[in-house]
Length: 213
Ligand SMILES: C[S@@+](CC[C@H](N)C(=O)[O-])C[C@H]1O[C@@H](n2cnc3c(N)ncnc32)[C@H](O)[C@@H]1O
Image (cartoon, rainbow, N blue to C red):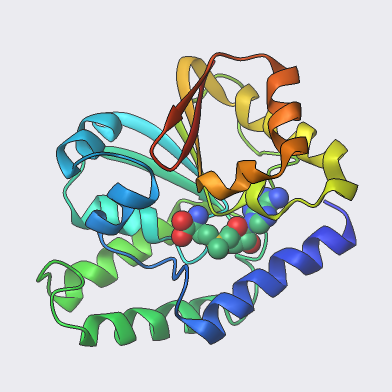
């Protein structure tokens, strides 16, 4: 990751923290249904059931927490280039208590369950960028890039964008899926062109694209 890319990733985390609106990475399972382009919670549950998942660019680990609290039997590993930021955990806890106060947000779970889900998610989080993933090849059944890796590349970094996609593909098992959202990412023609050059089977879902290795 170049210094400029690292700065971009840091800025993303702090902007998200300041705004708390838009994409707040702590969301309910129902929110992830639409964000990841599923038609129902049942479909999302089936998709992740008994899988090993990489959340590539995990923010405050909302996906890992939502799946855990939703009782989905999946092993979620996350990467976030700024997970080692000294303020990360304080901000994450702060966002959780803010969300906890909004009744029903965490599906009626008690604070102890939420804290357990948070600790587990963080234990399975690695400081890494998608350019250089600390995992062996053919390791994940599902790779999720939601509002993260592909979203934030600008055309000047198209080489790193391609290398990052290749890394996400490398760590995916044969027949595994790489699900990218939101669909607005692909309003940038150059991003779609790079994907097409990579040449994996590609399907649209309601909020983006899915590649099959
Ligand atoms: C808006 S948050 C989205 C978080 C999460 N995917 C979600 O759905 O809530 C963007 C995250 O992507 C991370 N990110 C951005 N570029 C990345 C890259 N090239 N490799 C890994 N993570 C990246 C940022 O550090 C941040 O944690």
